[in-house]
Image (tube, rainbow, N blue to C red; front, side, top):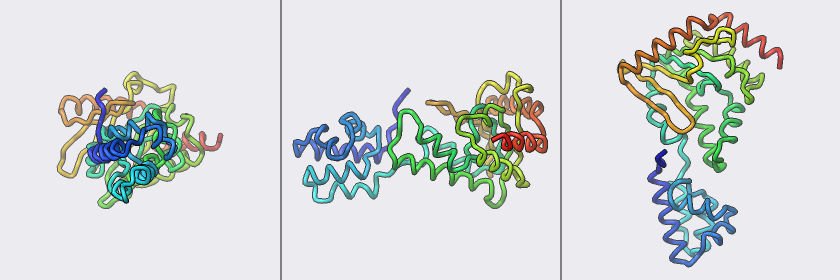
Length: 264
């Protein structure tokens, strides 16, 4: 897997290393002053991790940079979304219609803050606190698509396993019921007993933008794919059609979720 570099992080890390080397400050010394391991300092200097405010302030003092390193705090900020998913996020906000199927997670647009925070804060490898907060805020902002005007037509299909995930609580299930009452949102559940092979092959998203462009998207643990290739879009459409035919209708799905919420 290739490493995605944020150019601002990389520049900030490069300056951090230059100042540290010039002042003959070791990574161990900077790590001790900022409460980071030497390996984390190295990752920041290489642009793999974001140089945090804490390390920039500590380096500024140790290297006698007279505020020049601390000033980078205004520019070196955590990204709201992973680099591999940023194109998708841009197109998502332009969507006029969206079809989303999930196997093990609640779809991002339907997640509560508590659910989002539990997912992101337990991510491996772990992220620093600033990045976690930025990612949580970014994901919650995306939910605005459901209420944006003009309204986007959004259809979600969830395999039962997604509803029974370890981070799902009663609040999350009730939130699904509330969102599902909106006239532009449809939520369907695919129960275990109705599982079809098409529903076990992983997440997929289809969307159409205001310019009538159609995209297919799939997100894995380390690789994401956004494409407008007609063959891929067609294959996703066919697969999703099979899943929606086997899934419960919206009313039966709401009752299914209600029963699950009552059990918690």
